Image 1 (cartoon, rainbow, N blue to C red):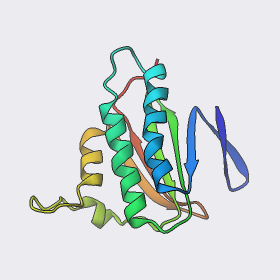
Image 2: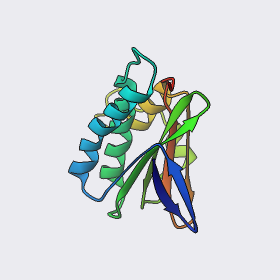
Image 3: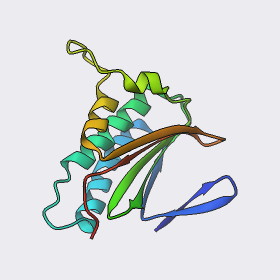
Image 4: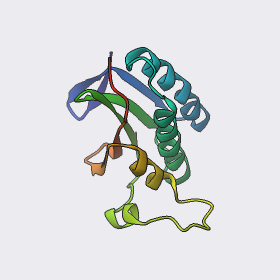
Amino acid sequence: MRERQTGMAAVRHPWYFETDCPRDALAGRQLLERYLSDHTREGSDLFTATLVYGELVSNVIKHAPPGGLRVWLEPHRDKFALCINDAGKGFSDLEAANTPDDRSESGRGLFIVKQVCEEVSYGQYDGDGFIVRAVLPLSRR
């Protein structure tokens, strides 16, 4: 169990990953998959979790300013919520509501995440940058 400092309080998370290197952030997908394989119900399809991780981390790499990336899991009822925090200003509700163009080569990441996750929330947090929180469709053990 790791602690992450937010303002003045430490928050405990069952899985936590932090880096300032894009290559390491993408390699973190394997660490997430290994953790989830040990902590979700037998036979869980981990593809969705690794897809969501990849889409959200790719968005940070493409759009956020330098400043590192923090990724963690939070228990959410009998599921896990995957949280991604970066130093950027994020996106607006209007941008998040856009349906990608069928002919576009990019702009599908958040749309895909919203389609496969049970719940997606996001927002700018004082001094902590932007956070996206996606509830994964995997049941915890």
